[in-house]
Image 1 (cartoon, rainbow, N blue to C red):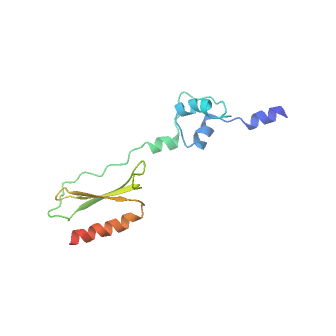
Image 2: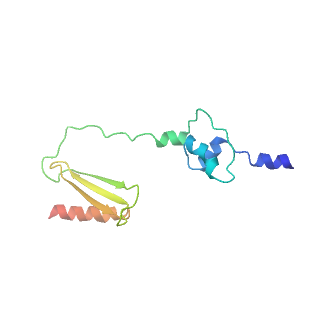
Image 3: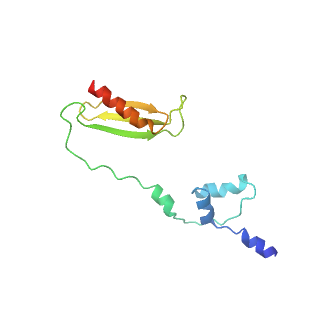
Length: 129
């Protein structure tokens, strides 16, 4: 009976790495100090997790182009970014509009991601006037 209980709690590094949302090896080494009943696991010297590797891959850059806008607001670039922490006024996102011709940029802070549609409509109305 006692041996059955011991095998029930055998957990390897790979299982814990995935269950704890892919922490680094250093975090896994320190976890035993700070977490009660954290299982003793053997940490491999080399570990390549497909999920971690994919998460670290950069996005492909846009191909270079020689085409430029010939008048203001002919070509607008836009990007929606999230802040790592919320601001004092609880803004989590920012949408940036960049005019290719004049190199002017406008930034609008957003509290929710779905507010980007309203911000875009507001920016287009400002451009038209």
